[in-house]
Length: 126
Length: 485
Image 1 (spheres, rainbow over the protein chains, first blue to last red):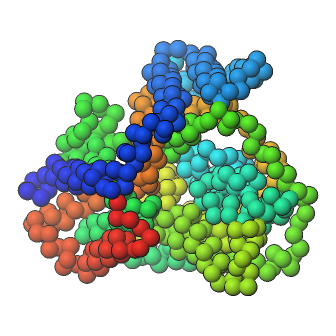
Image 2 (image 1 turned 180 degrees about the vertical axis):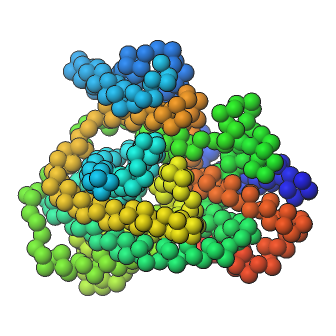
Image 3 (image 1 turned 30 degrees about the vertical axis):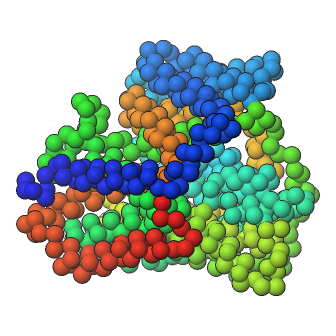
């Protein structure tokens, strides 16, 4: 293949440059200021508080994707949608019976709607 | 029949585009990526008519939330907020919305003229391109995008090189040796492009919005009245026409530069209009209709402009055209002069469909303006789960494998991280798209020149592109308003 046309040359070069750029960014003044800002106790609270909804949401997405081919689409999607909606509603302090009921109905409606829309895909998956 | 089918898809696309553009949290890029699988089942012209209608309408509709509630529906509508929201606060919301709609229409019309006239001559240039020229052009595209996107050159380069690195996953293009596949045969063709786009723009946006949710964030956001629905006098619209035309021109040229997009065009023209309107200068930022006209005409002018390099060279002008490039490949169309030579009728019919979509955006925008504004009341606890599920299901539907859903989620997390670190996502996308072009042409050039890098300097066009790349990097680093890191 030759020294300049091997399969590993390009990724190696890109990787080295990326590493260099990453180190440059980490050592930059702006990053140091941001790290100081992040670790101050007064600022830690909103940062930590921001994680749970995103972490919960991504975990639900992962669970959804992993069990999608094992459980029927409509009940699975409706359950996951409902769990996500309740999580967001609880976190934004608007959870009550009406919100839960609307979320439940919407979950079912959307699951059926998406199922009909993508039914060609689900003939393969089910 | 094909024309009728395309017309129906244009209407559907316009509705979807306005909905997507009006709602903060949804992006045209992820919506178009979700609908790419349609190109498998529908003819090329109606499929592209749908996708372009969504693109055009979403850019316009981003102004709805920007004007009525002060939250841009799309990043490109950020400049519109500067004068649109103050107009709404004074009860002139409907006037602002109408001016925004007409400005968007005019902006797209101007860019369409350029699309029809210069895309083919530009594509003809590619006949003079060989491997060294394609390598240098791809490098220039990446460098421009990294240098001008976001506030930091280093962050732009990180995004671009990360995209280039991710583009090496899969089979080596020359030797066919698997790289970074870790035994997953699903990665042999490389990282699946559409699920990655859906993840980085769709899921990434949702995760970023969720991480900034606060306890009082879910109340109805449409509190301000639109005011009486009064159509502005034609003299007022006519007085704004020169600004709209200039905005379309600026938007078109900005759209041709990879990585800039509607946001840059809008701010550029807004600033220009403010600085050249000396007598009314104090009114900008306080509800001057000129500000709305300036930003909206420029951001929609990007539509046609971004398509020009995409069709001529295969280098997308912005993130939406990056996704459209994927659709082009699925439809079996390869960007370059060959596209114009062998599929001229199809191509010009696609351009015409953008024109019809633009007209439809104007008509439907006016008719349903009040209904769309009500969409802004959609609660986040109902909207975000819908976006999440659609992103995952849409990713899986491309190849029909669950693995793509995992890819979308991983790229969603990557997109979220990039948003948090303020690394422009469009640079990663461009790296992912241009990586194969860069590597293949580099290695081919080395083989042709028997491993001599001088080949890139011996070809004049390649040398010009390389010099331009160096110039862009130096200028970007030197600009006073930008920090190097």
